[in-house]
Amino acid sequence: MDLAGPAGTKGQSFLIAEGRCEGARRAAFAARTTLGDGPTTPSCPDFRGVLQTSGGAVVLFAWHRYARAGSGGMRELVGSVTHVCDDARYRWLSDVVCTLTDEIRPRGHGNRSDVAHDAAELVWEPLAQK
Image 1: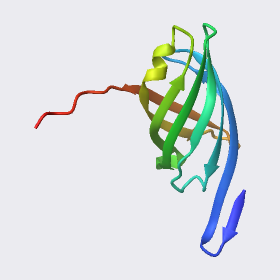
Image 2: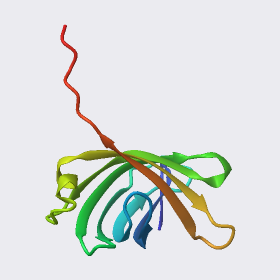
Image 3: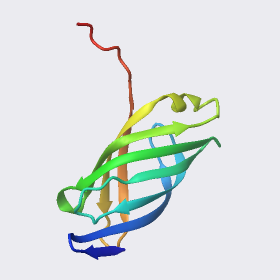
Image 4: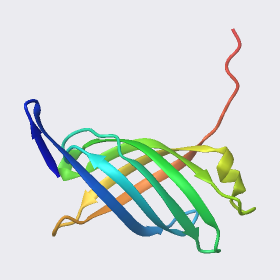
């Protein structure tokens, strides 16, 4: 949706995503977000969703991101993710914050895209003593 006004035009989209995660952990996911502005304007998309692991665990997640235009029509994102899980195998995720780097890569046809992301646990260390 494009909203035109005296200061210019802003866009806003509502997105529901489904997909799969592969790597150190495998899972299917579903998420929703509201995206602001257009593909060349910086924005702060937040996602809320659920991961269903291949072993049957359910993990709720919240992603907070900053997005900007990258080269070749790609969007670059950085941010953080938190999780909540009561399954003993993944309960440790409830106590960590992870950093994210993402790329949204447009497909050659239509308005579809692929998202590649990397998550890493942010590890707390004591502050240096003066």
